[in-house]
Image (tube, rainbow, N blue to C red; front, side, top):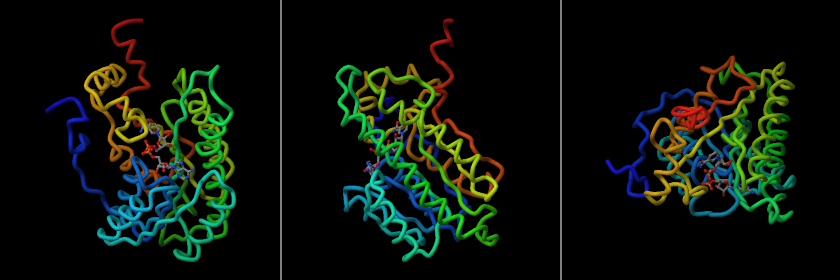
Length: 284
Ligand code: NAD
């Protein structure tokens, strides 16, 4: 097998079918027409949930994800909204209530990078990343919490009144030169998630995060699409393969299900060991 994922047409994650852990639940996944969000949305559908595909551009890709979920027997709709806009997020949640009646799971996934050396970083680059990656998670979580509080626990559906999964990154821990805006947004997500988890736990709302390592998606093509880039990346990944969107999606399904009912305020690192300081395996 070639090590270079650019030459791979199939996922390098193990092929597995998902148990139907989310039957009867409704899930909103932001940024769900690409990469990790798409895989999470499809996995939630396979696990039995009805799914709202949020996206900001790319109507066709959003519709394709909707069709794939419907073919598996779950309901799905696409909902266009910029997660950094308070009015668009509020309108999205109104649409969800109108079309689905309720919501059980929010996956705060939408995110991007606008990389620059610090001295050259523009305020626009800073504000765009913080606005979408961090403020976007605040706005969606706030609407979801309001909805979960109104609904309360519905025992036939789930032990919890609602679940929020925040997509963070290993860069909530690992400093990243040339990406200060991105690392700041992910560090912010860590304490947003933990503070919110503490605040809403008594209402039986569970808030957790996933911190992916290097996952093969369009956000980081330059890190894996040539053999030399892939080899350099693998010096940072003890497990010796790139992560696939499915690796994240399977953890998200578990975190959203009652199997993880006593798990809250936790970040699960899904990174092939990237945060194990691999440089110390042979030195230090
Ligand atoms: P991606 O570029 O494939 O997907 C990002 C999604 O977010 C796209 O659907 C995009 O349209 C959407 N989006 C961007 N701005 C938006 C906005 N204003 N409103 C709504 N949606 C918006 O990248 P990905 O790798 O799938 O990234 C998903 C999440 O995972 C991000 O939060 C990213 O920071 C995180 N992450 C990715 C990796 C990785 O290696 N791929 C590692 C760590 C964390």
